[in-house]
Length: 495
Image 1 (cartoon, rainbow, N blue to C red):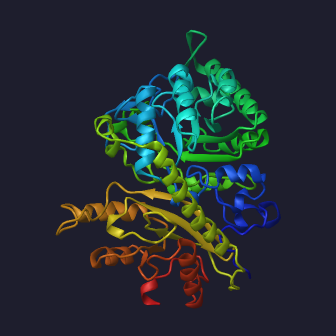
Image 2 (cartoon, rainbow, N blue to C red):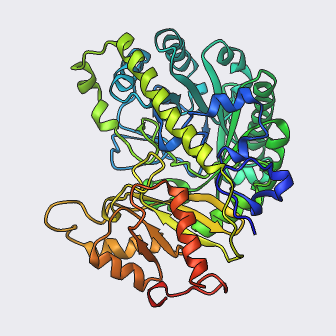
Image 3 (tube, one colour):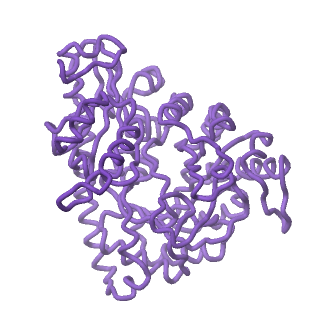
């Protein structure tokens, strides 16, 4: 049986949907899109699963107000240790935002995208949002501009969005049923008054769907975000995905609710459960088929800076930016050179992945976790990882499943690996539940033993290799050893 490499170009409709090939926001799932659209997302870290290993993004927080209340949201300021939507350390004026963008783009030439995503709703702050976009369109023409919105005022803003260098919009749509919406949204502020309950949800849903259609009709790419809330919209999201796909959204991002009590959200304080990794994957798979699913979302802060999975915002606070001298004309030249090099590396990986596949015998699916610092390579020490990427390997191919964030790295440097290494390791093993292999550049003796005892085989033999190539090699080895003939977990150490 053929084992298709990641990003083969067989259409999902011919290959039997996501069960027969890689699912997610990768090149394989984008093949059915027009060339013009694929060109727009080629280096977009928020839209392309492969590109996010190479290109960086940043958000500027110029929009503090919001016109709806979500039971999962609590906008916070000066929360440098929290990584979730709505959290910022500084709210900027448009002038400050443009200055920050130039400074970041000069210091991080991999940056390709600038987004406004909060901390409130950008379109509930139209003056600040569009002044920022107008200036960026004129002064930083080489940067893609994006905006994220709840969609309540989207229809009245579409014309303005089309006047700037904005060709990507994200709309958060959690439901298309007002009865379900009333459980998610306590109120909206509409036509100068606060509206509650089912009526509020009905208005929001109508505005979201109207705005989505208007964007599609104007040729603007639309990604839809949906927050998965177990027991409320988990089954309903399949219908949401079907409807937004029919309207023309090109990417759907189903992401887990964040409901720790310490964040102070309504759902957090009332004990709303977060989905497990398996539950999230099940809903994403159910929403997939020929709909492009985004699985690498990091649910970024509203002032995030850097590659997905990292945040360099602390390097670019207002006081530090004021001390920087930026020659943006020179920076654009350097950025163009760096982007050309990165695109070359990215296309080389895609071309390599499209080569004829190796013929392998049939085996069961295996989840493998990967420690990486980017570049599509296995290039991070186990103890330094703040998150692990999870892939599924099977005789049907390799597909990206998602990421598992950890509370903090197991090894924080120095002569020891933290004061409470045993507790950290225990939490980390819980996050890797379901994975049978861990690929990293290095791993210490103590965590190696603990991983094996948890049924996770550490592997440092593929350091600096492309992730997909290494996964295929390990899967091939497991097949040859006869470890994949039954669905039961196998102790690799005894093989």
